[in-house]
Length: 124
Image (cartoon, rainbow, N blue to C red):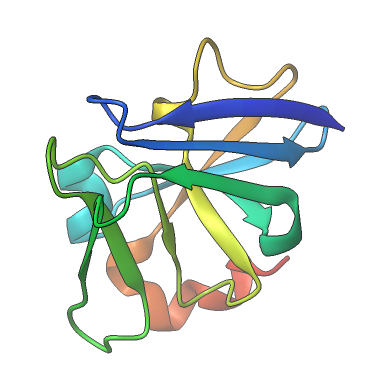
């Protein structure tokens, strides 16, 4: 396992996470991931530690309202969120990590525009 750190632009939201040496990450083409540039690195809740100032996070839900998109209320960056596809994990935005992507990381394309049809792929 590798310990990674990251956070938002202004620093009010910081996190650390344990991830495999060569994690699978997803580049999704759904509307919100495309507009925010989110590259998914799924981290089990128990392997994620959040450091955030009180009131630093604000929530946004849309569509099915199952995903909880969490943004820094100061700088607007979504460094992680609770996806509907992985209820036991956080989806960390790999672009919000300090430094480079984890060693050996593999980024796969995912057709999130057709999420319902393709969601079985997410849990593989």
